[in-house]
Image (cartoon, rainbow, N blue to C red; front, side):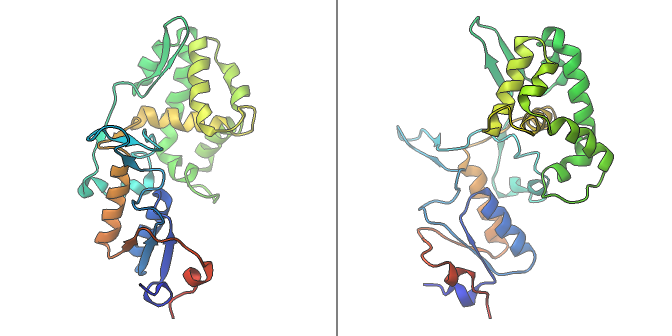
Length: 255
């Protein structure tokens, strides 16, 4: 058994996307890092398994990854060199209605807006501006609170993002526009009357128009495997089937 107290500078518990990303960053900084995972396989919410028939893979938790290509940090890792491939669907999402019609999020802002009837111009005005400023605010939106690189651009996003989804939906008049907005903001997993639930819908729609909502080829496990490959290539180590019984033994730094 490895002595985690003396052999490593840092012990990361859990091999989900955050754990693996943190482990890579620490290893890149020159520390000696080990990731401990209680399950037999790595991945956290990025696990894929043959749950039914042999050869048929099922994502156990996450499946579609709107932020995978949009993540500023992931962009620095060149995960394609570690075997990660993405499939881009024709439409990022579809929101069906009882009458057989649907609203959809296309990579093209124009195509999406054209499907929303009288809400077309509202959608164009909203998301053209957000797509234009996204490269200036993405690292600030997706990071802990700090002084932003472009305060004015972030304020333009923030004034909209801080509203509740139920308040913001008033911008749309059609069932297509309102349904598309509700479907996206529902990813917040909060009551849509809560403050800042608009942020989720704004971000997911914006990145959909920039980089799409990609599907990792082979399932979500492919992202975990690529992150693990990147981590190991830097000298990191991963142990599975390892449950933590004492935080003290893990958190004691290397002498």
